[in-house]
Image 1: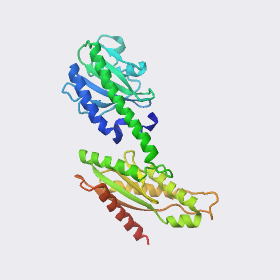
Image 2: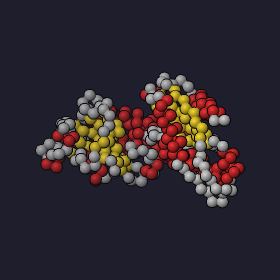
Image 3: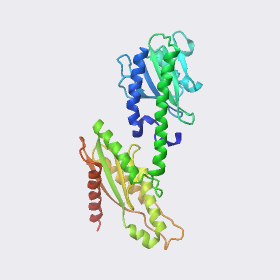
Image 4: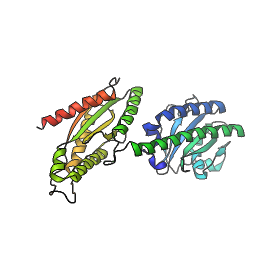
Length: 332
């Protein structure tokens, strides 16, 4: 279901990355077969507007290889008609038509022909469009229009798989106490992050965090207080990491964070944020053995792995774990 979408823009979610490569091939082939100037898969966000998820790579496309920018909801573009109608829309020749007088795709880019079909989630909500543009008038046959609709069906099948993946991840890969990924979930997402980092030459940063004196929390205040302290650490991590980072509770009182970084300073900043959040956290547990007048404290270790990344996830976690224990031992 749509509620399992984890980003404002699906294209920013690493979980869809394998599908994007397939979508790119499909859009390029569609554009070539129709002899069109450009082809796109456009994502729709009902709060933000429209953004190209995939653009054809042919020479005639002025947006080939460009970073995607967001087009506002009120901009008079062709895809807006697809979204409004919830169905296919074909404009063979927009020239000299007053309804398109302020369409930047016509007035600025020179696209006078457009054919697009909606792409939907499994519950019927609009994901976006798949569409072709041309700088000359067109007369697409019913067969060519059905071809684009068939490619749309393949994209929607990938969206169904994405939804199923999110459901499975939320059910089987989550820690029930903190709501973070459990160890299996963290490692699965981390492996995916590492593969993408190697492909695009990113540096990887890994943080290990341990709740200090877990035994003290359980023994002196009760196990409910220990659970509350763990939940507080999880909440502090969630509030402190970047949207593109992943995190998880990987053991009883141990947590991990992995993301792309520029240097060690990025990791230090995250750790500082977590500690600052915890300093203002107040834990109250009904039935506690005694009043709780302290906040959870953590030990943390961080390691950076510069590209080309050669270490395995296991080696990365071991190095960050050792750094965390050094921090813990310094406090003794």
